Image (cartoon, rainbow, N blue to C red; front, side, top):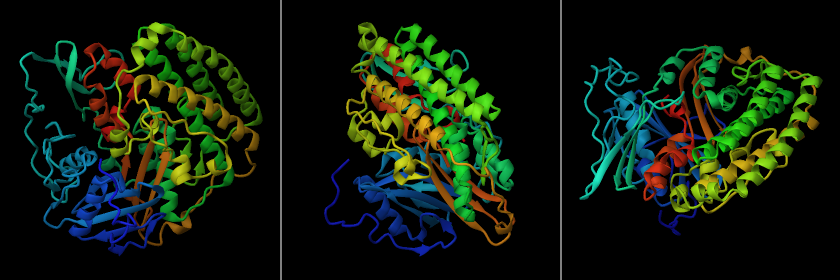
Length: 513
């Protein structure tokens, strides 16, 4: 990534177009190809960060943020009457997978894209470009062409797509020289569910349920992102108590996932006792979630307009007691990790993600924060009730497996702290409001960015005048993290692939929407 061009005083300067009035809370503008190309150039120079790139019939959209002020966000839209548009991935690699997915789903061609292989389409759908204005014949299934690696002693190791246990499918092609990884390339798309197609025409209730099922370990985060996007589009304000209950569920979800990840990383390092103890703590969080909210994963509990389940004083008291217990027991596990030299030998200096690369991809969550990025959607751009809560954002520079584990450790501590604050300050009042009166007015659009346990989740919706979803795009943080996993593993030994992979813990399902 090159340094910011000093001649550009404002990253949004000269990014002009027709403002779409019905888009909230950030502006969306219809632009010409030259403005689209200028935005791509600013992405390549680190002036802007890419938040998302998605398509629809005859148009592409791109959400960007000011790299120095992530509260400033802009959505650019480019009409593609001939089914072609200037590639962003040509100059900004984080867009490559996104543009390949747009080509698969909408048959929109990114002109100049250096990698035009299909990404989500494995030739198994029975139709090519299923969301295009005019559907095309099915693409014939053919062998996927992995990138070549040259060298006298290079050999290849295929991993997946079927893995042990209940891990979702994904294929990894490892090219190695002896035990040293020269290149690893991923192929995903095996769990493509057609979520964006299913969302089209759905009413808000069904759409919210679909959104919650994008990635099962982030059902609260996805439900919150979708609900906030809908509420932004409709000018719909949920009750104050609902906002606090949403945060409570989000932190319980974050806590459960981080506890599970800490144990799983240590297990891949040959230290199974950590997995056993962390799994017990995670299970206790999930059991309290079902006791208080009626579902272990709190699925379908966040809905547009509020939440579908409340918590009683007894439940709040049990969660508070559990937080005190987890704080005490987890600290002992952290001390055990920190004093086990054989485990440290597997994590320290392994799978290093350089800060410059993390910055280029605007990597969120523990992946970005372990490589020097001070990012957290709860603060930037921020949303209620986190503006009334005290918490720290841990950041490290080392970028290795150890750093990603320590970020999780610190986030466990912060989530416990946040849950205790939420329970102490939880306001009274209703938990849901209806907004049916505004649904019949006109088409409207909304966007939201929320912090899941992996990082920032983006949701963009267009709602028609009847209150149904006309178009919805959901972007998982894994879109920007999977390519970084490839870079982090290069130069490590083959045996360290599992622990590197687990330290990233990217979502297959959240990627393959």
